[in-house]
Amino acid sequence: MSSSRNLNHISDQSCIYERKSWFMRWLSRLFKGGSSNRGLVGGSHRTPQFIGDENMVLRAPVRSLDNRARTNKEKEELDQAIAVSLAEGLKKPNGYGWRPNNEEDLAKAVQDDLHSSFPFVPRQYQPTGYRVCGGCNHDIGYGNYLGCMGTFFHPECFCCRACRYPITEHEFSLSGKDAYHKTCFKELTHPKCEVCFQFIPTNGAGLIEYRCHPFWSQKYCPAHEHNTARCCSCERLESVNARYISLGDGRSLCLECIESAIMDTGDCQPLYHSIRDYYEGMNMRLDQQIPMLLVERQALNEAIVGEKHGFHHMPETRGLCLSEEQTVASILKRPKIGGQGLIGMRTQPQKLNRRCEVTAILVLYGLPRLLTGSILAHELMHGWLRLKGYRNLNPEVEEGICQVLSYMWLESEIMSGSSSTSAASSSSSSVSKKGGKSRVENKLGEFFLHQIANDASPAYGGGFRAANAAVNMYGLRRTLDHIHLTGSFPM
Image (cartoon, rainbow, N blue to C red; front, side, top):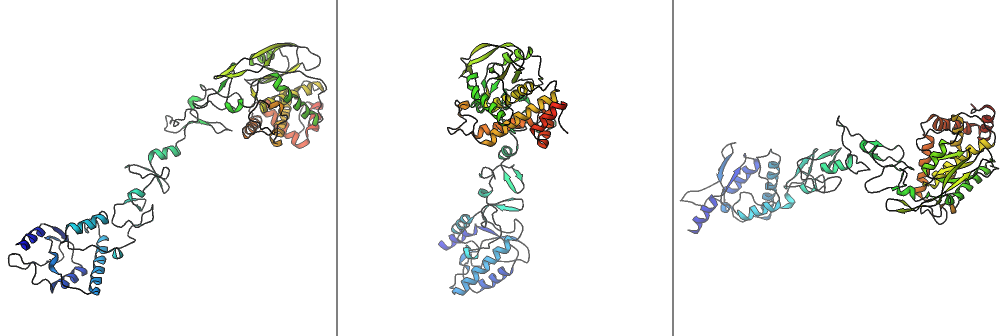
């Protein structure tokens, strides 16, 4: 009775027999001898049937069809035959073979159905090399897998090249053979504005359009070109996470430039005298003592209006070699930083009398040490030319040779690796205690050289390039002598 119940339970299980293979033929012959008197249901024999080459669904045969004792050799041959048959089945298209999701499913199926027609295949006989994971380089076996670019992956091994997390979305981005989450790929390839830190938007044509500083390579949205504060020294735009310091006259200064900024006339005097010494070292001594004042923007603009000499093409004039008698408000006490601006500035009016061809040299306050020094070197050259009798020079020649001296001084400062004077930068944190300039200040110096060399104006830019070519070919002294005689550069 119990045997009948067991057989009825077994008959509820079903499996799919594939087309008859050599293994199945061999298996049927193997089972014939031991199954003739077992598994009787209702007095009739129940044996596996294989009908030609057609597939058909039959009830699963009982496992007790063949339980005779076997030798070790026979067991080994049976296991090998099963493994080969399974391997053949895997080569067929989907739907021809049973393929469990993983080994756990396979083991569970064997446990749940003791009457399954195929026993569990030992690992040593499982076919290998069928699919190799492109992520971990291990066999995928019978588990779930993903196919991409002709390569197979375990689901957990198909990872984003950027964040290294698995890609579970239906859409992803490819770059060469590398896969990315779409958001990660955008982070890597779509430029972000360095002012607002948002993705730079596309224009009407669907193209990414942005502005880029020629020296600093600062990328930003075109919308920031005219409505965002720009450092009056290095020209970089103010970003949302680095607020600039307002100088109170419409100018702003970035935090790097303000580290070495010179704020009053007293702080600037050591730098001024060191540049005079630089001129003297090139046999270009200035015999007269020319006053030097650090002034506000308004005072400088007022002095320019009252000056008959000089050529000024720049929208922001930073220095002036004064030839007329004037009263100029000089900055007596350096201002302090309060919030986002400067407070506590004190000025004092000074009467400038004309004792020679040059009355005074005026320089805009609040600029970094190297920029202030390059302006002083430029204006001192104007003074030297006037004191030495160079008259009626056209703007290209006079401004050009003055820019050459400014450029030469900047080069000497950057190449020297040390400050001209420790006193000139005693208030600057960008200069070390040993007198050496920091990497930030040297980079600023390189930018100021870049500005001079790439100026687009005819007088300051074109004049500098013509003067620099003459000095490189003939030397400074011969070039100056030729200018004195002809009013032009030697060719």
